[in-house]
Amino acid sequence: MVPRPKMLAEHDGSANKLRHDPSSDSEEEVESYTKPGNHFQHHFMIAERRNVSFRRKFVHLLSHLRSIERVSPPTTLLLLVLIDMFAVSLVVPLLFQYYKSAGVNNAGQRELLSSLFSTSQIVGGLLMGLVTDARCVRRKSLLFLSFAGSALSYALIAFGGFTALVCSRVLVGLVKQTMTVTTAMLTSWTSRTTRAHYMGRLSAASTVAWIVGPSVGAMLYRYVDPRAPALLACVLFVTNILLAAKCLPTDEESDPPDVDSPSQRITVLQKLKSCFTSQTLGTVVLARLIFTWVAKATNYSQLGNFYEDMYGLEPHQRGYISSYQQFLQFLVQSTMVTAVMRWSGGERQTICFFTALLAFTFLLESFQSLPLFLTVLCPVMSLCFGMTQLSLQSLLTHVVPLHSVFSVLAALDVLQNAVSVSVPFYRTFLFRVLVNAKSDDAHQSSMADDPDPISWIRLSVCHWFVAAVIIAGLLLPNCLRSKKEAIKKMQ
Image 1 (cartoon, rainbow, N blue to C red):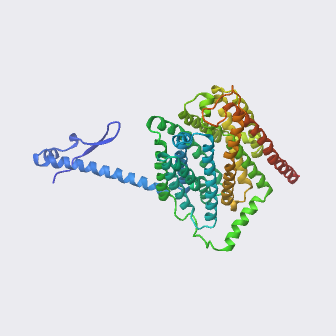
Image 2: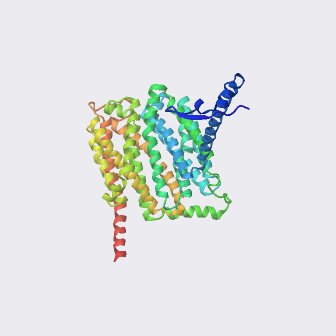
Image 3: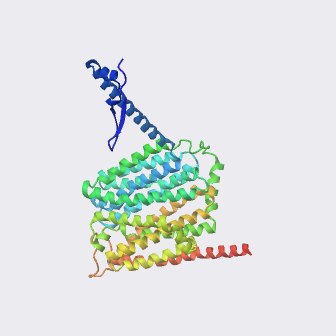
């Protein structure tokens, strides 16, 4: 038997390699492995030792991959939301370009597609709320349906014409309930003390995705292929299905009760009724609906060529602007929330102040200056929208009963989508009014039936001013009442 040669480990700067040290062997060992018959066996032993080392590293890698299964469900949900929102952000800023490729050439057709999407979301939200509250379908199954339907919808965007585009918007509206389902699942896997922390991380994950996604989608659209963003989104949705199936536990909920039980149906309806008949909750919900409606009605990013007509930008540069705006909102959410809340005195005051500030910001945008828009107006708008949305969400969690969180969230989604259905028709009406009243020397829009950018900005100022007055009338009286009650308790 050939004596085993001694081995030394040397480091070459990038990896550990094993080599033989002849100086450490005895004369008998040197004579043994230098014989012609034993030389091949010596090299075979060195290779075998290297294979053992490789197998150990491979086993360690497999154990590390298996540890993914032990990732906590809240962390898994954060990863799912990050991938899902990244896939969405690849396509949505470029949606108008896909509309044009499919033959959508006027504002009426574009707004009709938006209305179809909102209507589908109403139907999908109602069905989801019913089947989940009745516990006849698990929320994990609804998550799978959301990812699979989204993958099919985005594939239709990449390869279909106008008919396929209509089917795509209807399908994604029916099944795309990712944020609602993940928020409800998060309440099942977090305690009262950690829920706010994970809710903030969930919002941050969505914002990070929207920072990176639009720019990546713009580069893929410009330099690879116009269909590349939609195809990559399909792959990411399929990846989410596999990740959810592997990492989310199967016992997220108990076995569903008998869905034919009348008492169960009554309980669900009573919870919804008790939530929305509360005056405090009603004012918060109404304020959120008004904010959502005005934000959608005045949203100029959905106009065909707003940035092109207003600032002379290229179509694919919309993605860069979207990423920049989302990055600013992420900075607001991660660094300024606590300080701004303390300065303003609470959620209600924050909502009222920043809604009024939005009206003034839109007024400054009418100066049509790109440097002013990028350096001043974009940061201020991100601060206003970010703080108002967070304050509305936080205020809602304060006034909603804990046992009705999912019911209220699902019902609120339905209400917001119901409000959104009216937005495209209202915008179409405004387009006709502005186009008919447009003077000959006004800035012309490059898409049929779209108003000129300056007129639209001025009209947005009026909308936000009226919204600020109404929201202040809804929220501030309750704030004063709460302060008076607190003073009485202290006395």
